[in-house]
Amino acid sequence: EAALLDGEPDLDRLVNAADVMRPPVAVRLRDDLNIALRALLDGRVTKVPVLDDEGAVVGLVDEATIAKAYLREQTTQNE
Image (cartoon, rainbow, N blue to C red; front, top):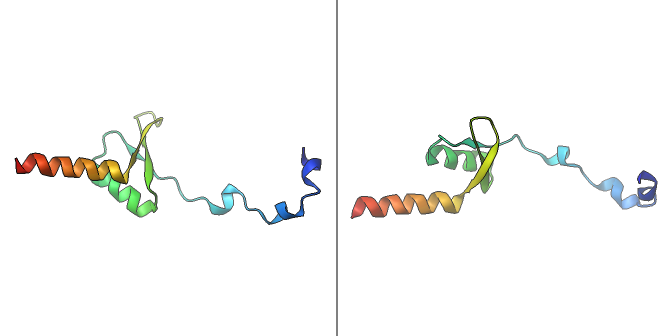
């Protein structure tokens, strides 16, 4: 397979994941949404994985989900 790529000089300029990666960002199931929002902002990402107690990914939380939960809570408090 490597010999197949020898004739492609443009591939020499490509970067790999290690060249552009960031430290991992994640939250736990028991973390509140303030922590999740802080992780999004500090990590400069739009989604973060949610981990269970064993460290397995059980889902994702994103900006829209946090905004909807906040608005739902505000609506409930105003009723």
